[in-house]
Image (tube, rainbow, N blue to C red; front, side, top):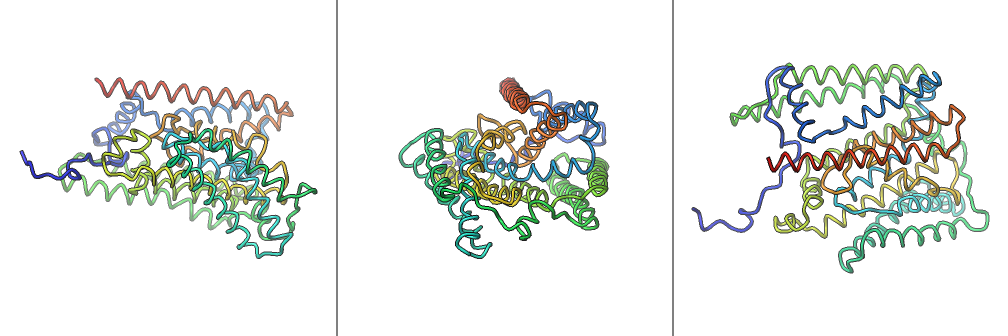
Length: 419
């Protein structure tokens, strides 16, 4: 036994979740068997939300065929982008087992700041946007200070922030209560009209399949170099081909209408970047560790306070960006911005998409899937000319089901771990 090992070397090594896998089997049959083994162990991934989304689309399409028309789906993607960006920030705080209840107010205040600085004060648009994002960073840092230094629960700190930021939003907007943005400005065009050219959108749709194949082959080579089991080339090729064919078909269909919105492209780019950060960087692994067991993460040498700070700052900053995009979408900043169901929809999107309320588990793509589910419900009910009260009830039921599935899956993982 080596008695000279340092505490740092004795600390448990934090592993990326993508490195912890059921042993790979060769061939397609092995891939399918491994998938069902993960499901039985409680690792459901995105399966529940994908199945739920398929059911929602099937029901609404059968009641009104316009729901799956290209133009309606394009409008759905425009609407997803604003709240979806806010939901990405919610993923960060949920990952560490905390919550931010002020994201709606933060988004509304950011839109008011852009309108006030750009339209009323004559600031250049980029500078006004940067100022709004800087306020998001400051608010997130303040929440982290209250949580880390004073021990104030995030629920209380952000609830206080909700009220204070809403008051600042009303103050900035003044007696008029709203500021109209120039309708012919690039910002409003981006939020309402601009779509990705067909050739560019098809080219971008090729990238995920290429990345899956290249990264898969590199991972396979590394595992084989150390005599570990590795996925077959055939299974990697099938995955890459399937995702490429699917994305190309979706893009081709959307291009029969207006096309893929640039704003949704920005949302997806942010989700891809966050997914890489959560799965492939030290920060992301630390986020998982702190959410899973704060004390164990501290003993492993992680700066827990800094991780909490980064989560709150990321959440508030993305909320501010979502507010800027919302102003572009609505061509105005008003007292209603960020109010209503924006706050709850952002939180619900992250949870419905698969981010755990218990901390330590989630992904950026959960926000993408979750907000598509919520906006699909809203769009379908609007086309059917049904009361908005149904939307709240159905969304609440879907959220409850998502939390129940998450809780049952967590219990299944614990029981399998004990076994």
